[in-house]
Each structure stands twice: as C-alpha cells, then as structure tokens.
Image (cartoon, rainbow, N blue to C red; front, side, top):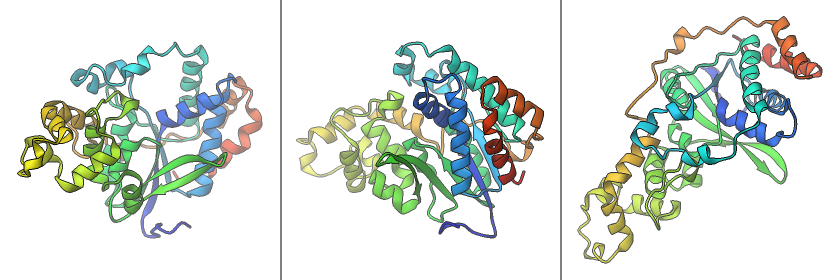
Length: 305
C-alpha cells in the first residue's frame, strides 16, 4: 500500500492508451505482436504496483482531425512527416482495442480530442470521490496534479536499464518542472514543447521560463506590466512581450485545466463490458500469444468492475 492511498476512496487508474501503445510498439517493433505483448506486460506491472478498483484506457482521435489543428495547423506536424508506419502498427492497435474490450476494460474515446483531453475531463468528474492515478509520460499532464493527492501522475521511467514507476505528487511536480502544477501550461507556452511542435519563445528554456514566471507572473510578462527600467534592455522579456499573441495561442493548446474545448463524456454512462474468454483466446491465438492468457486473466481478476 503506497503512502497516499486513502482507504475510504475508490482507486481509479486512467491510462493514456496512445502514449503506452506507442512506447510498447517502438520498444518491440521487430515483432508482429510486440505492441500487444508489451501492452499486456505494462498492465500487469501497473496493477501489481498499484491495486485499483477501476482501470480505464483512454484513446485519442486521428491527428488530422484534432481541434488543435484548427487553431494551429503545425500542431504535431513533425509526426506527419515521419516515414509511414508498418502495417502491423494499425493492425495491432485495432486488435488491442478488441482485446481490452474482451477483458472488460472501459475505453473512452472522443473524435477530434486527444487522450489527454479525455483523461482531463474524466479526472474532473472523479477527483471529488476517488483517488485518480494517471499513467502517462506526457509532461503536460502534470498540470492535473492537485495539492491534496486526489490525483497523481505516474511516469514509467527507465533507470539504470530497468523500468521504474515515478509518482508525481504536488511537490514532485515542482521539483521536476520548476513550477506548481497549474503553472505547467504557462511554462510550456513560454518554453515550447517539441513533441507537439509548439515553438514557445526563442531563447526561453524551461528553467528560464520557470524563473520568469516566479518573478513576474504570466500576465505581467505578456502585457508589459513590468515597471523595472531594465525591462527595455532585457531581450528575453521583450521577446516574450512581442510574441504575446502567439504565446496565448500556445497556452490554449496545452491548457487542460480550462481548455477552449472539452469532450462530452460522462463516466457514469460508461459501463464496463463483460469479459469474454473466447474472444480473448481468439485474439491471443491470432498473435501467437496464447501463452500469455494467464497474464490477461490476472489483469481481469485484479479489476473490480
């Protein structure tokens, strides 16, 4: 039992399915069944380390259809330029979703939104009555962490060759990012996020952004409400002021606490599907993974759906 668990509240694990699938696919890309194999292994590790009452795997929509692309066409554009993924990437993805359904796992999805949006919306609905664990390595998700440990982000990091879970509570986010969780969108808007093709301000890295946010605050930086005479001669401060309109756009792209658009989801209307042993065996056989049936059965047995 880890230190923050509250016996009176349900433990609900929200998994960033896109993030976890991509990491497992590329880790085991030389195998036609690697992504499914890795995903099963990951679920076993998660549930062994963090006993949970409900496990939810959240998915995002197609990149070309994301609402963020409407506001900023270059959003995640570099990913479109990469070489086409092998056919077994999409095939395994579709089969994995069928497998998870057969395992009785809820899989919310909303077109034009990302898994981040889905997790953020569900977290808001759950935090008052549950302990929410968010499993993802995306930095922008750290903004969801609250002071009362009702929500923690669990990062899966490789340390000395071994995968280790890292619990990110309020204090851990400050140590990791240099700012409080609710300031993470401001920091990313200023310093940029290369994984999403958000450029930020040239010459402003995460450490500088954290320092400036502490000293001046986000609004003062953007509206030139800094009375210090040195402001005129400070190129970094002036470059932020010059790019204020762009920075506000970047902020709207990374803000999950009060985003311009939210997915219409209601966790109360998401019943878990009934586990289907025959369907599980069929999918595992298709991918030559029948020897992993016991692990799948273990996952199903650990859930109290």
